[in-house]
Image (cartoon, rainbow, N blue to C red; front, side, top):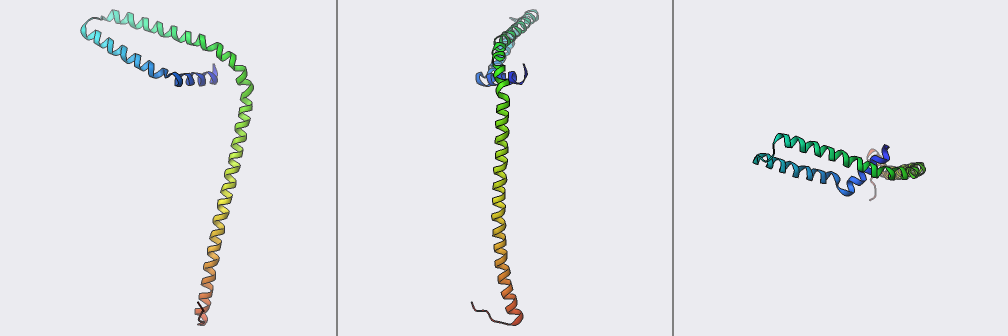
Length: 143
């Protein structure tokens, strides 16, 4: 069945909350079985028959689900095969474009930051140079 079938099963499971419903039914059955065993209404032999019957029912339902879903997957497979390369190409292009935009933004941020640092350094060096010269030569600076 492949990856597309796995995705489809997961989507159906999410849509119809299959796992939650299965757990709920299992919990209810366990409670009923414990209650019946506690009251003595269910013997080990009856329990074995019940478990075998439930396992057979589970296999039947699984086979039934595969039987119903398989034609849908077979019908959709040509479309998946046809459009999968196109989707992959679009995704690859989008990823490439996103990386390019991220690089450009990084370049702009780096350039702006470096310009601000150089400007601040020039101002500090300029002020230090004047102050250093004035103190070295004992020249008073006008404010």
